[in-house]
Length: 172
Image 1: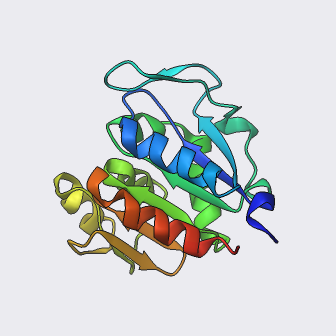
Image 2: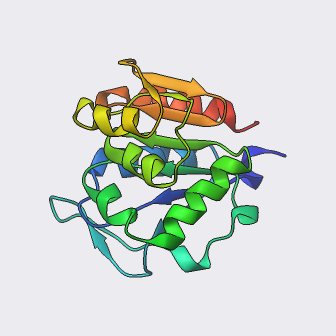
């Protein structure tokens, strides 16, 4: 399967971190990947600075079989995302199916809520280290950590390494 046949969901909710949403969204598109913004509902969401995103799909409309990977940006959006049982179930199902699940910064909160961290190695922004460890993961301070199908990163300056890992997980 070629990259232009791959489909990746990038999650979004209010208070998303601009670079952590737009960098993966646009970088994956540059590689020919079909990128789909997915929100808890199909309505406009704004970043902490007011930049809008209109998701193509709501959480209730996504199916694991329709996607090859999921990217979870940070900011405070993951705290809103994890209040959506459908989004949490989607992330859990993607992880359980062995498909790449990538989270950066506070995106790790979704991994905690999806209960996919037990026995895994992961990173995140330092502010949620305790949450990651309490969910059963071994937290490490590295730009990107790949543990099987789980890809985690810390902060916006790690985005180049984060995207390299995501692209490596998607066959060309």
